[in-house]
Every structure is written in C-alpha cells, then in structure tokens.
Amino acid sequence: MPEPIQIQVNGESKAWRRGATVADLLEDLEIKTERVAVELNLEILDRAAFAQRQLENGDRVEILSFIGGGTEQVHRSEGVVVALGAQERYSTAAR
Amino acid sequence: MMDDRLIIAGREFKSRLWVGTGKYKDFIETQKAIEASGADVVTVAVRRVNITDRSKENLLDYIDPKKYTILPNTAGCYNVEDAVRYARLARAAGVSDLVKLEVLGDEKTLFPDTAGLLEAAKILITEGFIVLPYTNDDPIVAKKLVDIGCPAVMPLAAPIGSGLGIRNPYNLKIIMETVKVPIIVDAGVGTASDAALAMEYGADAVLMNTAIAGAQDPIAMAEAMNYAVHAGRLAFKAGRIPRKLYATASSPIEGML
Image (cartoon, rainbow over all chains, first blue to last red; front, side, top):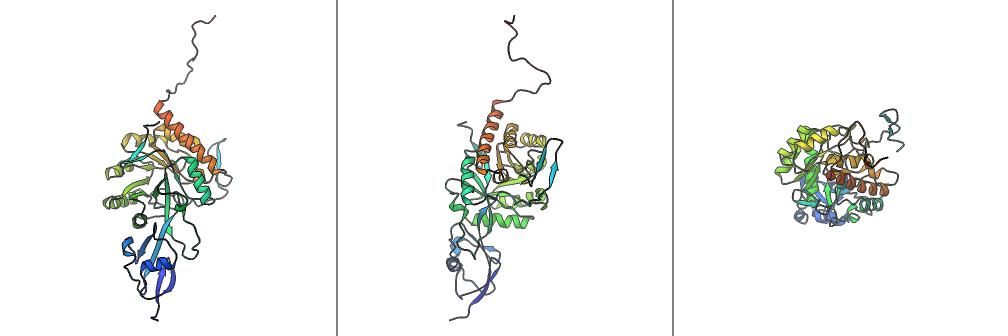
C-alpha cells in the first residue's frame, strides 16, 4: 500500500490515497459533480478535467456549490431603532 | 400584461419580481415563498460544500434550475479579486454566464464599492459574463456600467436588509432617464408599498430577499410583493395623474339644484 498524501479540502487537512483523481475525491466524499465547482491550488477546473487530474501531496482543493443567498447576509444589530420621524419608527429587532 | 415581458441580454423574464434565497427557515419555506412570489429569477450564493455532513440537502433540489433562472451572486466579496473568483466559480458550477456582481465597500453599510465594481465588471465582461451589477443609486456610475457592457443595472433602494425603502427616489429617476437598459431596484425594500413605489417610478424590476424572508409570514409577504410589483408596474404604464395643490371636483356641477 503506497503512503497516503496530505491534502487540504475546503480548509480541512486530509490524508488521501495516492493516485486519486479529483473525480475520485468527489466520489469518496459523496458529492455529486453536477453543480459543483472545484478549485485546485487556485485554478478552477473544467468538469472534464475532474477524472484526469491526480491529486498530489500538499494540494489545496476547494469544492463549492450554490447555497441560499440574496445579497450579503445582514449583520443584525439587535435593538437598534432608527428614528425616521415622530410617527415612523423602524426597529430591526422588533420586526 | 401579456406583452409586458422584461428582456435582458436576449433573455425573457415573465416576472418583474426577483428574489433571493437567503435567510429562510428551511428549503421548504424557501420553495413556498418563491412560488408565492411568482418570481422566475432567484439569486443564490456560492459557498464551500459541507464535506463533513454529507446528508445536507442542496438548495437546487428545491429550486429547479429548469423552472427558474438561477442568478449566482458574489455576495460577501469586498474586493475585485474575490468577486471575479466567485463569479468564475459560479460559472464553473454550471448554471450560466449570468452573474449578479457585488463588490462591497464595508461590512456596516454593505454599500457597493463602485470603483471595484467597475473594475470587476470590466474583467468579467471580457470573459463573456453577463454582468448584472449591484450598484449605488449613483447615475454616473450606472452610466459607466452600461458603457462598459452591463445589460442592466441594479441600484439599491437602501442598504441591504435595512427595510428602509427607497431613500433617494430622485436619483433612481435620474438613473432611469440616463441609461437605456433595464433598471432593477435591488436591496432595501421593507414592505409591499416600497416595491410598488419602485415600479411606479419606472423601475423594470425589483429584487429583494430580506423583506420576504424576514417577514413574520414570509409566504404571505412573498404573495404581497407579487401583487405590489404587478400593481406598481400597471400604475406606471397607466400613467398617474399630476399632483395638484387644490381640489378638482369629480362630479359635474351641471344639473345641480
């Protein structure tokens, strides 16, 4: 059994089997390849390259997909009341 | 309203209400709210896949990309490099060349960094992206964005998630007069009247997330927004009466005793 390689996947250190491709990694992690983007050492891979690219020691892999989002998540400032006028008051906390 | 379709970069959209998919309780609520909103464009963010908890469901299992136009954004990007990187990742994830480009200036206001926005938009347009820029209510910047090839501009109504409504209707009106591409008012609406007002001013569409997702009943608010955008659009096309200081009687004087 060849010695495993050390890689970073989404910021986590992982020992992985030598000779594995990006497609193997996705399969082992049970991630469907449709609608994911893979960045290998800051290079965005074409989907077609997943099965070709072999992982090497020290590789940094980022696997991304779509999540719910509108614009930037709001940093809720609780309890802050913005006074707009005598009658019109808007509170971010008491929404 | 049959022929009243919104067309951007050759793509036709039925609804003039676009919605975000963030901050909902769960995917079921997201799905129901989007359905109630009548929107056919939904924005999504690009983030790391959870590799430890593989049971996590995917948003796109609930929002069918065949039914909706998925508009990836670059939310959370505070510089040109990050925004360009996220846009490229979104395209690689395989939805389309569309991107809602955000380059944010600071965390407190989430106002766009318009200098960075222009720079990032230039790069992405060269790479074949259809860039829909989230911008400030600044007519000059809006014009520059159109000049470099943005097929629509998305000026804010107020800071993201603030619910303040349209803070500067006059600037929005100047933008509408200045650029000949669709204007999508993005961010800051709080309730239905804000959305109706944006459409009455002549906006081509409204994009919102928090106003719906943060409402006590998001699904009911989504429906309200749907009506509001329709009502506002109809009122705009119908042409409102001018504002006058004094009364004008509606009933004739003739025939009175």
